[in-house]
Length: 140
Image (tube, rainbow, N blue to C red):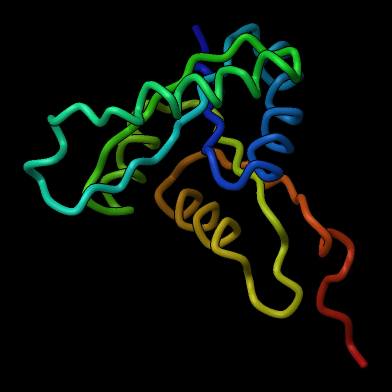
């Protein structure tokens, strides 16, 4: 069985664009979609403490997925840093979809995160969203 397609929650528009790309990918692979919502905490003691907003965050992303027409699970993942989040996503395996704006001259944070996932060995698809989707570096 193919692991679920993971969508990394970024901005609203980025997550929406990633979900729109992940739905047909998941259908083609005959698997489901999981939205990974990062929750960065300040210290390791806060990792096990339930955050009262985690359920609200999960509900918000579940509503976004249902509005688009996806039946997605939501994984609110608490970590003390980006490296732990990268390890969690790569450990699950399967394709990962990251959406976000495309930087005009410099890469956006979402693009840099997708690049780090690829360097860690994940199968990554970056989906552009935002105003700069067609304005790439151009030679003068």
